[in-house]
Length: 611
Ligand code: M6R
Image (cartoon, rainbow, N blue to C red; front, top):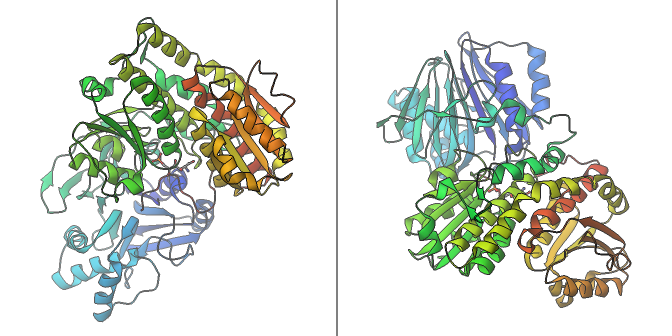
């Protein structure tokens, strides 16, 4: 959470910072600010709210400065107002700092600084850090780099920071621990950012800082060191994201664009990985690990949010086709509950961003305990991808909308590929492998067919946009889809929604059913179909409204429900990749009709880099 950006070079930093902040806004949008040094004077401009409010304020000033830093905030310590907005600075306004993360011991550091006469004006943890750096500069007469280093050695918590000093206006000092930080390498100019999206229009060459690393960024070079002051050589990576991949491309919202991109994004997830005539799977990232994975005694899959729902679907897939016991864990619980981890376990961490702090921390713990650690990530070069021993990229392309859509379907594709790969190394026959790989390859066209139902789904959204509660029900492979449908609706429309295994309804949630309660049933043609029909009848008997997702050719369901959205059939294991799409569209249209900001829903951020 929070996005940070910085520039040093011969150009004007201001438009570069504002553009970078716009690109990072999905990481937080409570407030935004920049600071820059011009003619030996440091200035700060901050605004509460979105980057657009800051842009308006900055553009009125017509500023040009060759060095600057910027921040877009997701509030942790202190309400989202202008005072608490970053950058923070010292009393003399000679030091400026932006921070993504949390300084956990800020209260004790603050108490020490107050005793020494420091004053604080914000409720943030970050203001403590900038004053601690100031203290080291003044008391020990240290350079900016050394003062930052000394200060960070006192700090507990997570940070990606960038610091400017008017005394050393030729550099930006950056450091990372737990929050991402990327350096963009240009020609007589350099950049820093929380992720590569902010850099793609300027450079394709990037350097990823690792935890406990720092760097001094000059316009024509950078020097990287550890927090213990040891010099390190960093590898320069070439990024492949294009600037036009991170625009709305004519769609009113990123979320709609990303939903509509799914035929292509799932195609990219499977591209070059299916060997159709042999029913085999090739995953370059797992090369050399296939046997170890296939011989695992247990697979644990850990993730958060939508990625956790993908993990639940994968549990059904792997247990059915590979015969390996699977456990699915919320990363936040896994890391703290002393899980039993064995060396012959494979632990898969699923994360779109690859930066989710709980997932990353769980991964590090699993690795420390000797299990094989696999990452399934979207963002190339992300922290989880880099920390994994082995892994698979989902290649969904940049996902900017806070509500995850195309990443979910691509995660499911990759988990289906992993399932077939393991299963073919165990008991799955070639015939079954061929059947499954063929079914996977046919998914993009089927998704396209579902997207053509957009108008029908929009009309259903119109009917239910004022509902205050929703139930989502599914069984088997589609129970996690019910959870995902409910999550999509609540996060962008603020309507209370619950997902349940349909059979659990009679153990409690059925009490909620009345003629105002819409229940969305996920009812494809699979072995649970007849049971789901009984559950639908139970809701109808209590006057509930039913929206069903069913398969083409299912005419039986038509008279039983209020609305039915018909989708193509596929292999039972793959149905979630299709059934979720109408639910994404339903949530999207309801939120739009309620006049809400679907790409930046309140209180949320795309990348959750705090606990
Ligand atoms: O980047 P990750 O996949 O690790 O993110 C996990 C969750 O924060 C994320 O899926 C979140 O639940 C989304 N807002 C759901 O739409």
